Image (tube, rainbow over all chains, first blue to last red; front, side, top):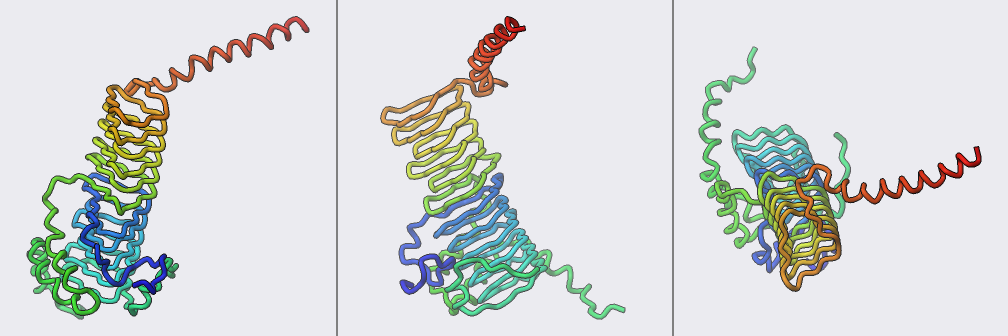
Length: 137
Length: 188
């Protein structure tokens, strides 16, 4: 872990004192226009227009994201219009995703609406991810 | 012409789609061996449970937001926000740092605000650090609080802010317009 560059977007190994970091919650009525960046866990029940970075991200059924998601673990039950960069992705049956899902492991539940390419990437892609790459549409 | 006859299967996903909670305990097992050890997986199970809890937004201390927040509910900020905040009840916690304007019905400042606060009821706690103006209707400032700015009881008044600025502005305008006008006439 120490070998990782400081600016790596995704921590491929979970932090030791991870439990100490409280969970952030974007409530149902909250709309964020801008970027969110946390080392901890983030639950999104509201709307985000912008990019998200978290260690672990839970996008709830009523959550909506217009933008990129960067996380180690991403669990998506809501709507995404954008790209997902996550080591482990779980797409729930209530999800509605448009865009791309860059993943190492992925799980898609039956019933999910996925209008996305889902490119697999090796571990070191996420380890060395310092900047979100620009991708062709 | 149908290549895939999947009509018989379609009713199935909808009943399965509804119970989100039932899907979660099944999920933890498969992705576990790849890169995620056990402790993380135990946390995964309770995660979707706060679905039903009253939705208050919490910006925890590890979260940094660059941009605007707009809510119809309460917001509790412990982290860092670079941008404006609009909420009903806004609590800026002890270690929080906000750069921007905070609008709300009730705003409590126990952390640092660099910018403005506009709310009906404002509380600056003893740990609060407020650099900027406060527009309020009802304010409480605890001993130990830091305030660098004006406190104006003009919340809710339609042109309260404009009022305060206009008075001296119009007065100075009158003087300035009057003075050049007189010499102009005398020259003419």
